Image 1: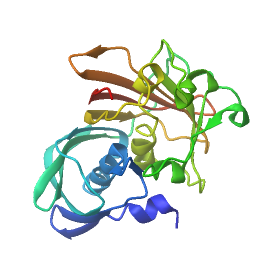
Image 2 (image 1 turned 60 degrees about the horizontal axis):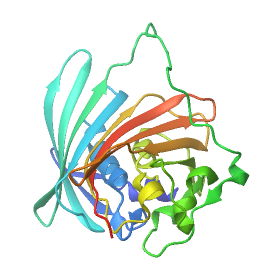
Image 3 (image 1 turned 30 degrees about the vertical axis):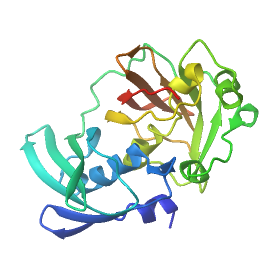
Length: 262
């Protein structure tokens, strides 16, 4: 079994209540990755949905989670011919840590257009990109293989850019195939875009993350980008994209985070 699958250990213990163990295999500076936590909640949601297409999940991160036991509570917001909507709440020690809303659509009839007015990021070949260095407490990159575009990786050695963007190739180290749940984590796994222009900051905690899944990838390696354009009032936004090697758009995200300089 792939490590990600063993760490998606969501089990229904009573109606609409699930238990899980938050793994420390997907942590950033000792904190479980927000996309991984979102995937745990979404895994519980999807078990209630007879519609599975183009999921949209938005999570508000109320308080920091830690590795260990947790519960997920699911409630139905609405069901219609086209959409199912759910609310999910993740609790640890009886305290609510994350609240999420998930929307799942019925399969389309194929009549919609596919029009891209923006293209996938142009990246050098994987072998010419920069591997993330080993960093204590960053177990996420022990299990995900990230290769950063050299043009935006200068922050690793203290060379900053005028553009707040990180982009590169991402894949599971054990080459697990990608699905809806893994995309939720993958799109939140790029280093903060603010690092490129501001350097490695002490803390960029996520307040809200919204992910829209459009297509399931057809390749192991994914082309990912994360870009921030505005630093205002101690907040930043970050727009993420995930594409596969066939240039299919797989997922997009919008994240709001706090920004605190060292």
